[in-house]
Amino acid sequence: MNPEGKMMLIAYAIATMAGIISGLLAVYAPLGWVSGWLIYFLSPKIILAVVRDLPEEMRNERIILRKTLWSFFFFWLYFTGMTYTLMIKFQPVVYYNGTLLHNLTKG
Image 1 (cartoon, rainbow, N blue to C red):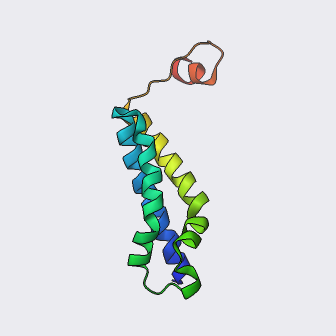
Image 2 (image 1 turned 180 degrees about the horizontal axis):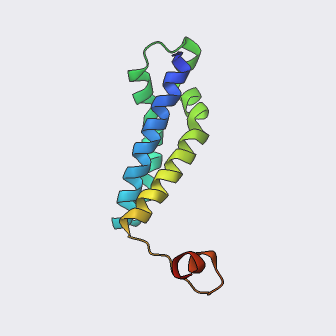
């Protein structure tokens, strides 16, 4: 696998872990959402430590942050929302009898 592919794979893994941590912390503390962004700013250090064969032009932390921003954001957002929803044991409520949820559950 090429070095940039390894870098992105590790960034996805870090974003997944950050999302799970943010979701767990958000249940108990309002600032739990911020923890994911703190992990985002620490992720270039982890990536540089793990992926040794990055080209010299990719070894700048600002470049790594710029390349991984959107992938990190969407993975973090998905796993934060999923973990938070599972932790609060969300139950959907039917407010109208013509909805698809009502038809699937009561129909």
